Amino acid sequence: MASQPTTSIDVNRALAIWADYQKHHEITPLLNRAAGIEPISGRIWFGKSGLDIRDQMLAEGIDAPFYCVRVGYDYYLRKRACRTSEPISDICAIRG
Image 1 (spheres, helix red, strand yellow):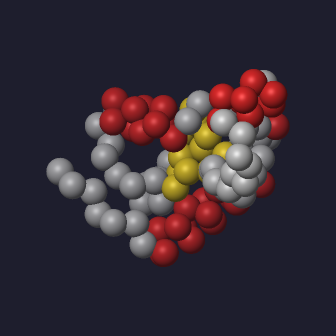
Image 2 (spheres, rainbow, N blue to C red; image 1 turned 45 degrees about the vertical axis):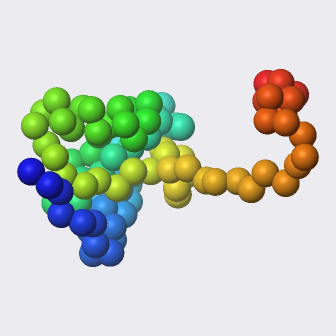
């Protein structure tokens, strides 16, 4: 069954659920983990990545869109522009 597209109402609801969760739970041990918030049921899953959360949901038979955020941040992933002429392998070796 195909999932319904996520709306801004779903995102706002997910953000409200996440804010409420943080008020009532200690999230320090979960820093840098991914949190997946399903806005319809209000459930929250934690995992190493958004794909890990998706696998958990599918294992439970849940096929619904969810909002993903990195615990301790207000985003899941930031895309950085790479403004260098160095080959990627050299950059990775330097930054380790």
